Image (tube, rainbow, N blue to C red):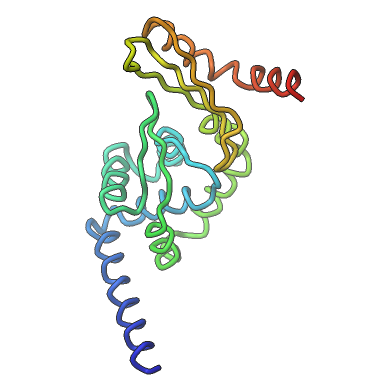
Length: 194
C-alpha cells in the first residue's frame, strides 16, 4: 500500500513539474496564457481565436503579438488545441490545459475573472452561435466539390449535410450562405419531418 501511494505522489510531482515548465517558459506571458485557459474553461463549446483576441485586446490586457505568442505556446505545449475550419481557428482546452489551470488559476486576479465571467454572461448566445454553425468545402475524388454544412449543440451534431456541386464557386457560396440561413433551414427540416 505504501509503495503505491509513494508512486502516485511521485507521478503527481513529476506531472506538476512538466506542467509548470510548459506554462512558465516565458514568465511575462504567464498571465496571458492563464487568461486564455480560463476563458476556454468557462464555456462548453470551442471559442474562435478571433473571439479570444477580441476580448483580451478590447480589455487591453496585452497586445496582439504577445497574445499570438501565448496561444502558440499553449498549443505547442498541448494545453489547448487549434482546429482550422475555413477561415476560423477554433480553440479548445485539453485535459492537460484544464489541469494546469486548476493548479495556477489563483494567479489570475479576481477582477479579470469577473470581466471574463461578465463577458460570457452577456455574450454567450452570440459566441455559441458563431461556433456552433460552420461549413467547409473540399474537392471530392470524382472532381466535384462537396460542401459540408454543420450545426452543433455542445458535442452533438444536430445537422450534418453534405452537398455535391460542380464548381468550387458554388461550394464556397453555399458555405457563405449557411452562416446566415442555417437556423431557417434547420427549422424547415424539423417542421417538415416532425
